[in-house]
Image (cartoon, rainbow, N blue to C red):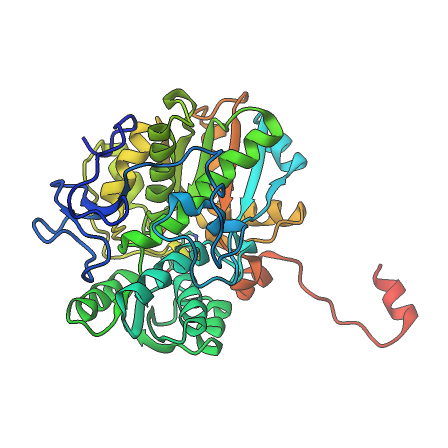
Length: 425
Ligand code: F0G
């Protein structure tokens, strides 16, 4: 099986370009990486994955001369990416926060928070876009498009704008947080609000892409995940530098399951290069909102594929997704790392958002799902008290100001007078 955790580094097929090619995860067909626009397998429509002849070790990252790219963040991992540099703002190099009070409260040996909200547009999507837009330039396209619950649209608009490409985004009407629409709008995207959910938007934009209207930059695009896998590299390097070991578990929110797939790919490539032992691979643990949890359902039922949920609802609008397209990559990621998946209620998400905020870490609701899920798994005894855990928080608090306002303290009106203020204290 090509997605096995201990699959050896593959040898390059004739179509490879400088040791890089595309492979179908279902039937194994291989394709030249940059000759044609292609999102899925020509032969069986399976998901494609970028493959490398020589995946690098930790020491090899950033060892070669940087051309014109930054020597930090995503592009420091250029030896493990399809290009050496790309359209950059720059992205990556996000903090791995200590949260001592939350760590004690959850009751694990170590809890660190990888805060992806600290990227240029405030979410992890920037890591995928810097690589995806670089590929778009290579392919010579002039317009980019995505469906989005908000963050992808903000990143696409910013990176597409920087590359001077047209950008089109399809959003589920009334279900995208204000900060994200503001970003897509000001960065210059054409915004179409669809009377349907995210999955319907993705169906439409896939059809547009198939007809050649624009280059698709959803996480179905395998190059997006190349940028996002650097989250895994950063977590392992930073955790190891501080603790001398790798984390036992990484807990992350799941929507389209792109990050789950990308982190698993990071681990497999490190195993292939000999940089990581199979027994040191962290357990990938996915968290979904109870109202949008097809991945959790598939993991609980031991199913090989997900059932598309037509009706989805959660206050964590970023992960309001019923048909996670990366499930065929993410389900093996969770299973082969001995991880699990769990669903949490919206109230648990809000509680976790407050707990993070009390430690100074401001995140949007979907991000807090990771911490809410960890708490639940601790309560249920699935996660042990001696585990070293990293929770991924995917987007910044200001992405969804309405949710923050609802979860936080209410401002109190007071007269323009010291005594009146003192009376309230
Ligand atoms: N967290 C946030 C803040 C997100 O915006 C998303 C996805 C996820 C988690 C889920 O990540 O899809 O890799 O499992 N947002 C997409 C968007 C769908 O359009 O912005 P995933």
